[in-house]
Length: 298
Ligand code: PDD
Image 1 (tube, rainbow, N blue to C red):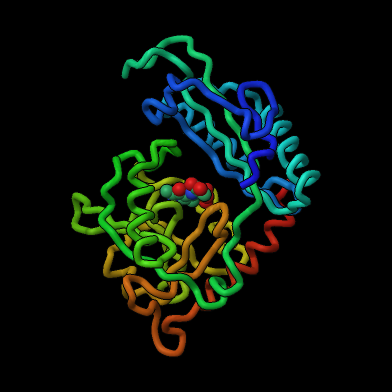
Image 2 (image 1 turned 120 degrees about the vertical axis):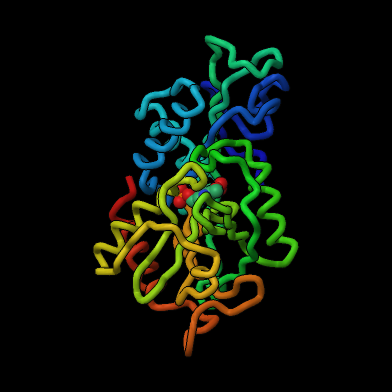
């Protein structure tokens, strides 16, 4: 990654190599902060207002005041996108932005009146390869051993990092996680950095919204795309057995868009002629997603 790339830190634009924060920043000491990842296509921000709304929800949940207005966020995003385009001619990018509670002597209690630290950078998008889209990707599974507030887009991602590494160690792309619930289970929650979906009898099914699952920006987007395509869409508890017996399994995230999973723990996903191959609901949602990209970017 080029350290000459422009980033934004606390009111100033500078090369990444020159951006520095205090060792007493609570983001560094406690992981006390939140973040967002916004995809950019053709230098335009995709579903920007939805990402900003989630940023505001995350900030409110952890009691950090929103340090900027929508116009300020947008202007900074646009400036970073333009800089990456001018410097490296990159059209499709990913904006990463992070807000921490700020700098203070180490104490678990939230200090009053801190100025939040704001950091933003923009990088080329690492989209799935044509090969991954054509053949689908492999995932492994694990018990969801993370904390109980997966709904907060927190920078404290050690649980997700450990979970992701479990699949990486097996050459797989994601770790799909299940959590025991009061009424049986194990139930599907999400993957280390993606939401997870199954297709059963032509319907797209995802886990219900809860404190254990991040409400991905693609959760509502897929709802809209299913309505356009006439595909039934439902959020309801999904058991581990349901996942293993699904017709199709899909991942969604800012960078994966919608991506087919064709192997889970080494077993082929699906049935009949489509076993181990991306299925028809994936193909329709992928095409619909590509149309949405040009219609919903600002
Ligand atoms: N990850 N669940 C988790 C735990 C995630 O980290 C992500 C995204 C998602 C999907 O959310 P969205 O559709 O808004 O990208 C679900 C981002 C991309 C990341 O951490 O890099």
